[in-house]
Length: 249
Ligand SMILES: CC(C)(COP(=O)(O)OP(=O)(O)OC[C@H]1O[C@@H](n2cnc3c(N)ncnc32)[C@H](O)[C@@H]1OP(=O)(O)O)[C@@H](O)C(=O)NCCC(=O)NCCS
View (cartoon, rainbow, N blue to C red):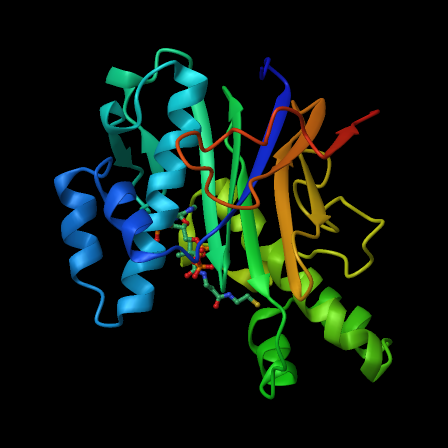
């Protein structure tokens, strides 16, 4: 059960067999199916279907609806939301995926953001830092050893993405206009709305970095992990969270 002030973060596997993909497709609406069809690469199409099916199944559970009954629209910058017609509880969410994993963060009544990235060798790493990170971030960056920079890059990137996704402004928000910390223990923004958000890093699987941007109204943060698709019941092996964080402000 999720109560006001709780944030739930779900992790789920994107790699599924053809039979599962066919079954998962059944809950998608015509616009999702046609979006799926537009992917040129089959593996991208499959991951799209799986993440949207998980999105529907997980959200439907909170609303006591069935997955195909959910309807979505989006804000002016493309951030998806549940349409008012099916969202009597004002459930908000954000979705992210990378490589083999998808993550979904949700809470009642307040927007939030989430980002996951598969950690890989980035030859253009320093170039990206120069292009997208703020002056304050670049000063922190230059003090790090080359070894620490590998992790720091993904901590910073997922924090920045989770924050812009929480605000829902897409890339109309200049990534250089705000600063995050590369220190995992520092979860506030280093500039601007620093007491309004917590940028909490989390690990989902080896070689993945993720971050959830929780609004100040968040009191607890619970992580749920779906390791694989159960035969009939997606949630069969997921009765309780595998980690809970309580915020003390
Ligand atoms: C599109 C964007 C919202 C996220 O893109 P992304 O990191 O490639 O993808 P993610 O998997 O994290 O998120 C995609 C999901 O975010 C959601 N989303 C779409 N627009 C959104 C918006 N304006 N705000 C929040 N969420 C949004 C959707 O649910 C989408 O899922 P879908 O494609 O299945 O519909 C945008 O922030 C972006 O393009 N970021 C890349 C910018 C960049 O270069 N950053 C470098 C930082 S160093």
